Image (tube, rainbow, N blue to C red; front, side):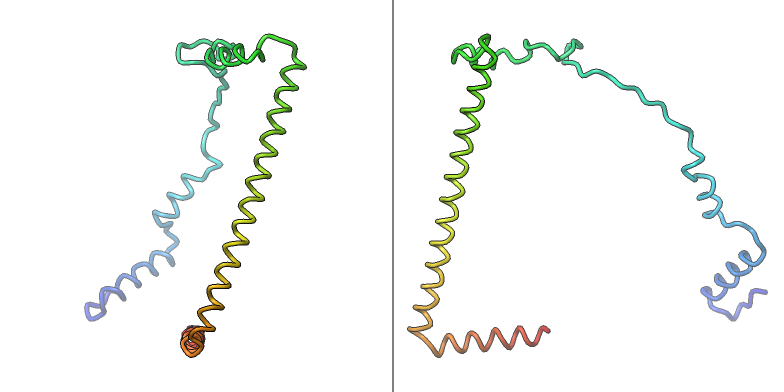
Length: 147
């Protein structure tokens, strides 16, 4: 069936076609069928509790001695829970105020920079109108050529 006058590509094609017609499963198809995910065994899972390096549970407050020391120094540790909550509220309020100040400052700086850039472009166009027209024409030609 293989003709020696045929190219190797045609010979390979004819061999493949003959295998498909004969009903023999290809190795790739057989491999895919054998590794179908539904045939995989169920894996066993195990949950664990987080622990520290020495193997003890990491739920105690002794894990953060420097934080406790800092809180004692400010008087915010070991006292009334409402004092701690009030302290946290004050801190959150201060952070919120600082964030809004930074955001408004960044917005004002951005607006000022944009106005400065526009003014600079306008001044350049007024000083050199033919150069500005030439630049715009070149940009328009490039943009039109790429479309």
